[in-house]
Length: 611
Image (cartoon, rainbow, N blue to C red):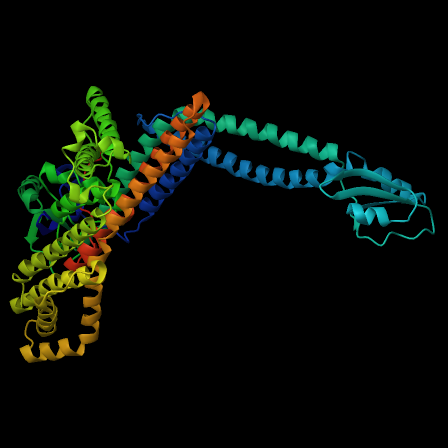
């Protein structure tokens, strides 16, 4: 659930401002927006952070490219180390800039060397000297056919490769030039260019070694960055306090459950504290507090970077339930589920042995794996091989009507997908109806009942269009009646005459009709669960068949095992990607759209000491 917030204004004597900010950070419950705050101290701190971040990135990248494993630990940094670090970082950045320039110069020289190599190593000044004594030596390139047609004397082939002949023409005074484009005489001999490249490579190696030697300092870099981040946040809050004569004040947001802690801090620090409900236009942060069983879905939201708005809905519970089902149907294979379960259990054992807190993501993966095993078992899908489902200890779990290798099961599974979609979207409109009942005008909530009725009617239309089922007579009544309710009630507003709301609904009838068409397509879109799940099964079966044909003799058996391993690994990876694309989409787009969610929230981040 989204926790209720209070808007809190802290008022202190301007002379005690710094101490008050320190106390606010100690209590660590106040979310403060500091966007647009500027000061010379803040700019200096941000510049220092940017310098160290850039240097740390250079050291990390260089060390990783050299195959060096880096520690993720944070070290300790004294004041002297902080002051010394700035000069070291500037030195590292200087080396990186020089490395970039040298690489550009090396690339240019290597291109020059590539042009010179076919001609071999010679001194251009010797050719120029011969020209001064009346002996012209010109460089040319031509195709073999062009070269064979040349009638001139004293043509000498230097090199021939890839359909190009490199040759020189030696002319005496008065002899005509060849009617070909002459190759420009180089300024430098090949050996000199190669020597320059060698010197650059030596210098590059030297500087890269010097940068890599700083890898041991990365924990100190991280410690200093942590200190700088804390100092920047402190300075932002300190500078962001508005002044009113001898007083200074700042406004933030505090969760309702932490109000008592803020009040205690205000009493201890002799602050003035004003608490009130947020205004409708306030950028209130979102803090979601759910029971642990529901909280396991949070890593998915963090991966997506989505936060519901403070006045929106927390869909965590429904997201978890439906995402679990979507995951199971898209992966669709009990064998793959066993692999994922084994990986997750092994990771949990290693985590527990290390004495670390159990990540929520691992708990979620266990649930998703178990659901996949259940779905795969009842559909008889074990690594895409029909023979496994026929084994006595597995066949009893199979539901014949949705058995993956039963051709008649496709229609049943599609029908099941449409039922899931209808239920999913109906929950969205039912939930919105209950929410709208708490707002004014409450009569607008009836529009959601209209949408709910339309969704049920459109479900029957989908079955008729996609599966050819006969459409019941009441389905059209549900669609028309629901659409009529949407027109009548969706545009009602507080203080507006009812009939004006009806007229506005009629004026927006085209938009509302398009929304109805969208609802129809949204129900159909749930067929992706069937389609992607079927693709997973078919790809697995194809790799099995391919391996079966290859398994002749020892070499063939080895090749078949390799095909099975690579094929099923690739199939599992593609299925996992499909979960992100399709399983998440049905929750974040179809379901959320029918809920009217915009995911416009700001994550609650209290001003507190860094851990």
